[in-house]
Structure formats: C-alpha cells, structure tokens
Length: 359
Image 1 (cartoon, rainbow, N blue to C red):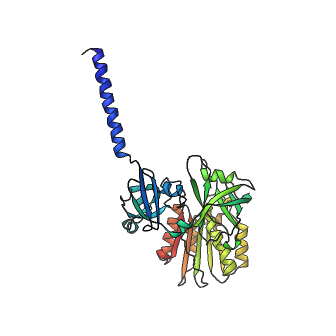
Image 2: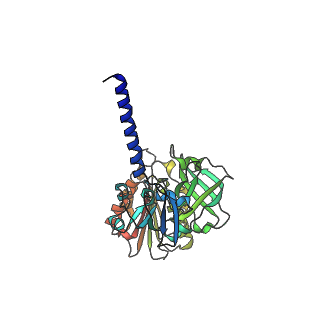
Image 3: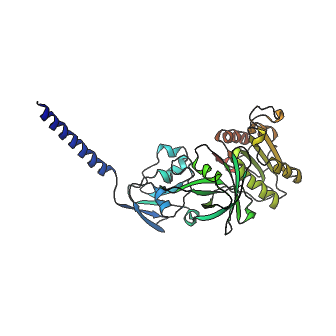
C-alpha cells in the first residue's frame, strides 16, 4: 500500500469516527424543549432540554435554596419529583434518607431535564422573590468573621433559625449562598449575618468586601427549624464557629419574649479570640436567671485551662437531666454535631426534638 493510499484510508476512518461521534452526541444530548409541571399543573414551565432542574427554576424566578451553587454539596435544593423520576444519583443518597427517596425527593441540581417532568414544590419557594438590602454596618468580630448588618425597605418576617440566600454577582449564572440570620426577628427592617471568610470562597469574599451603603440582593427567609415558644419547653443550644448565628438569634429573641423559658447555651471555639460575642452572652447569663452560658476552647493555648476541651464534653458534664418538654438546636462543623447528638441521645432526647445544621 502506497503512502498516498494509507493517508486516504486514515482520513476516511477519521471522517467515519467523527460522524459517529456527532450522531451519538445528537442521540444522547437532548434538544428542544421540555415541560415542567409544578404542583399538579398549578404552574407549568417550558424550558430547554438538557439543563438541570435547579438552573431552569432559577431562570424562571423560582428561588429554590442552594447554598453551594448547584454543585450537590449542600443538600438544600430539595424538591419532590412526581412524574418521570429517573431515580436518585449516589450523591443524593448522602443527603436524603431512604423514606424520602421512595417518595421521590431529589436534589434539584441533580435532576437532568431529559423529558417532561412533574414536581412538587413548597408554596414558600414559589412565593420567594428577589429583594434588596443596604449594608449599614460591617464589623470584624474575630480574625476572619464579620458581622454585617443590612437594612431593608420593607419588613423581613422570619423565624429564629432561618436563613437567607445572598445573590453573588456573576456574569455566567445566578449564584446564591446561604447564611443564617443572627438577628432577633423583632428588628423588623434590619437583619444581621455572621460571615466567615473562606479562602477562595465566592460568597464570603463578596460579603467581606462590601462597604457601608452597598446594595445586595437576596431571597428568603428559608428554613424548617420549629422553635417551641411555650415557657415550659427547655431549650439547649449548641454552636461552634459561625454556627453562632442562629443561636444568637434564638437567645436574643427568647430572653426578650419568654424570660421564664430555660435556655442553656453551649459554644465551642478554638481560642479566646474566637469567642464571638462573649460579653453579650455573659451579660444575658447575669441578667436572666433562666439563661446559662457555657463555653469551651478546643486549642491548647494555656489561656484558660479549666475551659479546655471540646464542647460536647462540657455538654455531657454540665447539662442537667432534661425535663419532660425540651428541644435542642445545633449549628456547626459536622464532627461537632455528631458528637453532640450522641450526648443528647444519652441524655434522653428524641430525634424529633433535635434540629441541626451541619456546615
């Protein structure tokens, strides 16, 4: 075979393979539009096939929570697929329990739009809208955590333990990051966030660079924590790091509205400099006989040796036997949450009495 013939054969084979790839791509990559039926036809969207459900909903101003930008690492964007559910991906199984999986609960960011789809979405999500707020204060409260206070034109109605999603400017897509509200709901047209600066973090970098007078857009509030407001129900709060935010909201609200309610707050930090709002909580402890504040340091810095240790160890030691009605709210790193939950179960708490947020 001459060189010329070999070149012709090679080019022919290359052309055939290229054509095959194009054909397979057309077969495997959906084209055209698909329909999304929401809540049995209450609302219907026509969207481009091939994208994921979360992106399609955001493009149509349906603001499903998503703290990771659709990467499947936060587990917030839960919806229920009622028609044409292709089944959960392995990644989703780490966020959704088996009972909910059987009901069709999925992460919207992991649902590929290959065909028409039926979904069930909470009315709260359908009613959520993009709102704006102005920065009125930005204060560094530790080496890498800022408390940022925003003012809104209209009242933000929320419950302790809820969060908002801040829109992060992006030319390519709609990006949102979730942050717990640190405010007392009574503050009406103001809300506060405690934001830890994460190296390379899109959301935290954006928020830390904001100046007084800057405008942000957000959606929410979101969240399913249900605080029992009856005075007889004891509260146990456990926070670590910026897990302080929802604890601060609960503590400030409860001591103001229900001073007779027993509240025990346990907070874990690395060093004394990381003890956020220590003076505020010591004053609450001093002024309110039903509020008790405990703290612990996990790093051996010789600053306060009697307080050295992990916060779950102090919880095990200090928490009194629970009364009949009780709730626990936990927010912080996953290892802390897991250790604290073990202590609470040993203390007699039921799973339904514990609310937590791992980050």
